[in-house]
Image (cartoon, rainbow, N blue to C red; front, side, top):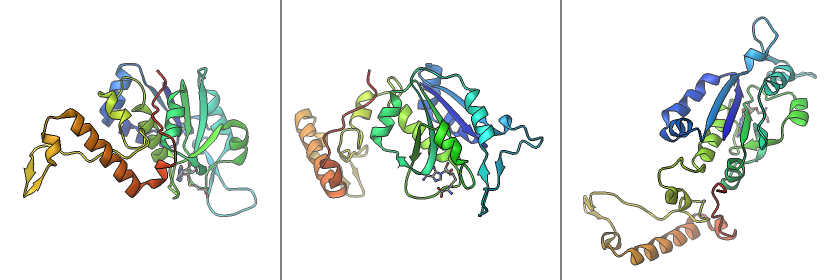
Length: 233
Ligand code: SAH
């Protein structure tokens, strides 16, 4: 899958290289990643890409011209989408991550300041996506959140595919509690069943815990049919 991001801060995406699943995906050619500096598409001698909004009001807007030029400079793969990060967008959820993971290419536009010229949204953007009901300074963190969630659904990225399938939300339930060594720490013990070696009992215990936890913390999830989806193979 190919990711393109258009941003005035393309360097912040070097964070992605600190995660193993990302660099492994790039080495295996499962992921292709390109960060494009919006300023390179400005005709202004100072590479300016923002201007004041018509009609007045606070702040600056990213101008339509460099955004369109940046977008048009990109090669487009058959299944490709242009997504603008925006607090006005549809919520980014596991289901949306699965949908995006089935694309060949995701082009993420990172807004800044007051956002972007509305004509760009109307005529060049396929979808607006928000990562939550709060307002950030720019679309770079939302773009990274989305790419990380999507890339771990791609085949061969996460070492243990079962781990992805049983993750919270992927299975339509929250994941069961997990423990590691030591079996006892300051009097706090790991549940006996997990040390029993009885795989069937462990499976039943985990299923019960998972259902109980979901009922307690996220009863809304139980109203939906099991999501059980990752990227279509
Ligand atoms: N004035 C705009 C908000 C601009 S915030 C409004 O009221 O709608 C600046 C940029 O940060 C946005 O263009 C968007 O790209 C990004 N951004 C801020 N909050 C976001 C969120 N919750 N989800 C996704 N992107 C967000």
